[in-house]
Length: 220
Image (tube, helix red, strand yellow):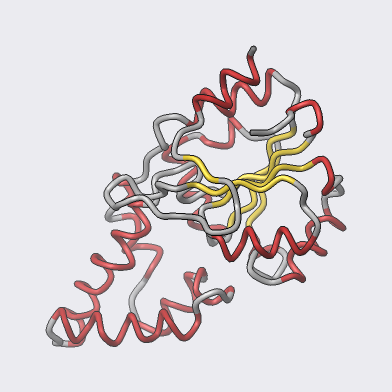
């Protein structure tokens, strides 16, 4: 799929790309609505209706990923609530060998996630994913999410790389589209970000559901 001799840097999303997205989906779609319903004496259906409408309002913005925003919005300590289900944080099965193969092949492994810095810290604590990456960035440190073109300008200014020799992997097609507009040459989607949900289909970018083929290419 790719000529690895023409790629120096691999930018990697985290949730759904390196880690199973089930943890995040479970929290936002199930666990938080249950807590919100209990706190506000609502039915679970009512709680979901209110929360999901709020989700839609800020989708694609930095607020959607911000613990402080949702703590203020719900009057619930999101950081503390997330720790109650952190046992659900787990790697995608095929990722570690792929990341190790990238290192063996001399590729720079750069994490670029919209995850809140506190969430990133928790996921590092649970998985040790920082040991498999060269550099880690949360979009919050730049003030823009990956859906915003300003993020990409800020990233390359802070951490120079050659877009023509960069591969970016993400499970969000909107984000891949923004990276494409910025000029990143090699783009890849992840079909199965959540192990408990059906696979998705990418309309405009190549996509995979397993890294093993790439691992073999890199080590071959």
